[in-house]
Figure 1 (cartoon, each protein chain N blue to C red):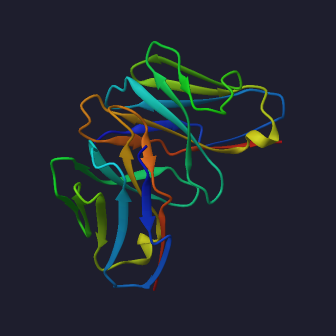
Figure 2 (figure 1 turned 120 degrees about the horizontal axis):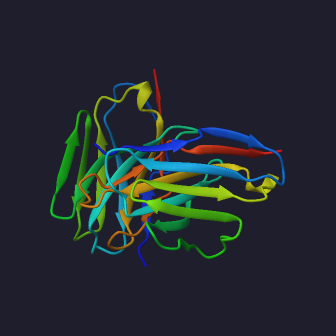
Figure 3 (figure 1 turned 180 degrees about the vertical axis):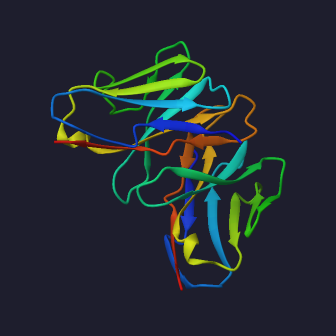
Length: 112
Length: 116
């Protein structure tokens, strides 16, 4: 059964720092991996989608890498800003077309 | 990109009444939609998988008679909380995946249900 783990559970940094969020999964036979952001009381916003054949994806200050063989993904946030404060979730499909399996998330707080 | 519209954003209802939540895929067709529930400071909990034109598949422990799911078209799924009670108060979120998987999974903005 696929399990997704995220480390750390919480992170507090001053504005401007570069940071890395980690995600690991137990079954390397994934179709893709997706990173989301959730603000308090809001839905999920998709940040990056990495297909199984890809090694990384970039969007603005965000870069996500995928290493299927080791069951790991990292989300790199460059030059963090207070507006980046949110909970970041990593997820993989449980199977073809099935629901996502989520990690418990990393709650990020960026202070100005 | 793929957009999922969820309505209402919040609703307050009296105990014993029913509430319907809509989830629409605006610019893509979704044969499958997913309904989640989230308690404060907790992870998303999958409630059911909704397939267009067929019965929904409910996760263990989710009462199918209380949480009625209908997926009548490729762009609309609804969740009806029947005979709502205060313990049904929660944040409900829907999700859909485009047929080709180009955009991964897209989530609605969620519905905050408060039963008084």
